[in-house]
Amino acid sequence: MPSARRAARHTAETSSPGRGKMIAAVQILWKQIRVDLHGDEQSLRAERLAFITDILKLKRPVESVCDLSNSQLARVLDAMRRFQSQPTLTGYTPPVKVPATTQQETGANVIHLASAEQVFTINKLLDHLGWSDLYREKFIRDRFKRQKPQMLSPKQANSLLRILLNIAAQREAKNSGVTVVTRAAIKALIPGLKRRLGIDGHGGAG
Image (cartoon, rainbow, N blue to C red):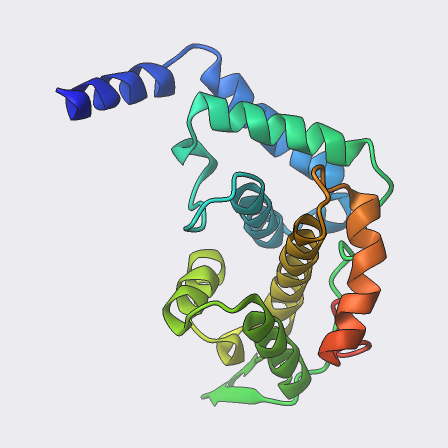
């Protein structure tokens, strides 16, 4: 049966000897590309999965590198090596500490939440991407264990802003006919994208 054959191929592929090395290579290469996120494992993972989702043109966000087939891992590795050979991407900047204007107090503990400006900028980018409310919630929940931008910490909001900016810029580059989207192409598009959306200088994502 076709479904049985697909399942057998998937089992054989995910248990192949070289698979572990490919997964490790993806994680190592991404750390080399995103040196600005050294020590921030949560943001590093979130942006790696967003990059993979976009490169593979998947309809749903990748939840784990281990979910990828060997052929998908090979495509991701090729894309990462291309990115590694390009100049630093403007949209990929270290998190900026932004004072939160909204706080949630629980007893003696004060939990700092994303600022109103960060939330505004995130929503602007989400509107631009045209994602449904359900998809937005899933995208944020899968990466930060929260459903709404308002519930993110300032650090998480910065990470989400960088992810969304790069997704939007990569999409714009592809729509303009660019076949291989490089850091240089994205670097050239991000400032204009931010100006058109009215978010230039807002949100703290750089």
